[in-house]
Image (cartoon, rainbow, N blue to C red; front, side, top):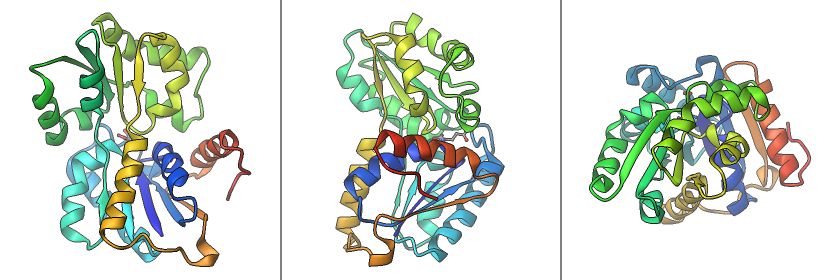
Amino acid sequence: MIGIFDSGAGGLSVYREIRKLLPDQGFVYFSDNAHCPYGEKDASYIQERGRRITETLLEKGAQAIVVACNTATAAAIATLRAAYPVPFIGMEPAVKPAALGTRTGVIGVLATAGTLKGSKYLNTKGRFEDDVTIVEHVGQGFVELVENGILDGPEAEAVVRRSLQPLLDAGADRIVLGCTHYPFLAGVIGRIAGPSVQVIDPAPAVARQLVRVMEGAGILVREKKALRGSFELLSSGDPASARRILALIDAADGKKEKQ
Ligand code: DGL
C-alpha cells in the first residue's frame, strides 16, 4: 500500500504518474484541503499536518509515503523521515532538466512562496545559477483555481497569465512546475507560453524514484488481492475537489471514476 498526500488535489498529478508504473499497487490518498493552501504557512504548521497525515496513512497500511507537495517536502520531509520508519519520497522543482535543456539560457520556476524559500530549492538553484538565469514567480491563485475545478477558460487564463508573463518576458524557454497543483493548468500554461517553451512537470521522475526506493527497501511486493489497483480518498475537508480531479484523470486514462 502506497500513501500519498498533498494540501489538496494537486498530488493527484503525481498519483496519475505513479499508477502508470505501479497499476497493481493499492493507494491511499490524503487531501488536506481543510488546511489548503500550504504555500504561505509556517514550516512548523506544515510539519504538524505532515505528522498527523502520516499517522493516518500508516494506520491504513502505507509502506511508503509520497509527499506529493513541493511545499510540504520543503517544510516537513526531513522531520517526517526522522520520526517514522517508512521511506518518504518528496518533490523538488525540476531545475536540472530545465537548466540542461534551455536554449535561451533563462529558465522560469513557478512554485509557492514556501517552496521558493526552502533550503532544498535554494541549494539546487545555487548549483545552476552560474550557468543559467533562473527567474521565479509564485503561481498566485493557481492552487485556488485547481481546488475549485477551474482548469481552463477566461478566468484561469487571466490568473495564469499574471504569474507566467513575467517569466516569458524575461526570456524563459523552460517553465518548471514547482507545485503539484500546476500540472492541472498545463493546457492554459502551454497555450500562453506558446510552442517554443517547454513546460516541465517532475511527476514522472518522482514516480520512477518511488519505484527505485521501494525496490531498494524490498517493499515492492505483490499487493494483497483485495487491494490491487485500489484507490482510497481521504480528506480533511470536502472531498468534492479531489473527486472532480480524479474523475478527470480517470477519464483521460480511459478509466471509470473510482470512489
Ligand atoms: N500542491 C502544493 C505544492 O506542491 C501545495 C500548494 C499549496 O497548498 O499552496 O506545493
